[in-house]
Image (cartoon, rainbow, N blue to C red; front, top):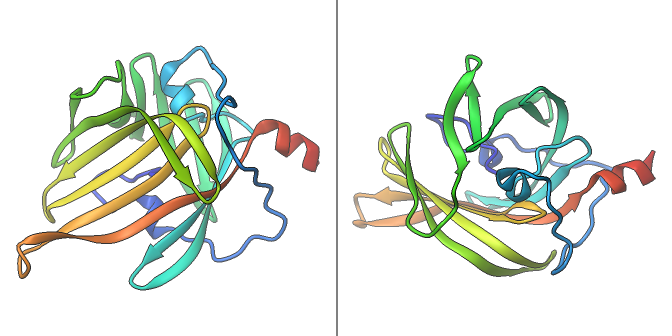
Length: 204
């Protein structure tokens, strides 16, 4: 998800919900992507009625993490994970974390093309891939963009795959281990299911 906290380990990896009865999810596949009129929102639909469930692996344990768009007002979108609230600003040039009412680090910044880069706290973000097809147990996702955030203290790389019409479907954080002189995967999250506005309406 992300769904990240600036200057911290991504929130999707830290704020876990262990169970949720009746969480509506659906598999996604090719042809389900729709346009919102904002390219960044197409890749991360921070709109009412959207929710995501992730299978998260960390420290040898697997848990379920649930996120949902709790509210939208103006260009501000709020995602809830349990009692935690994560705020984002939907800008004409992308989606940024909200910090004190101002745009912080961008999750997705336009235009999206391979090699595009922008600064983030303690490092930089780079678009590593576009147009990727990702196959997961929850479905096959097309037209995906991969963003890598490289940061220091500690040295780490967070790789997030955003798929058009779905949102983040895979997130992996690798941290440098000076003893091994290499990066190790510390946390991995994969999309189990997504709740769309029409799914939420049917559940009411």
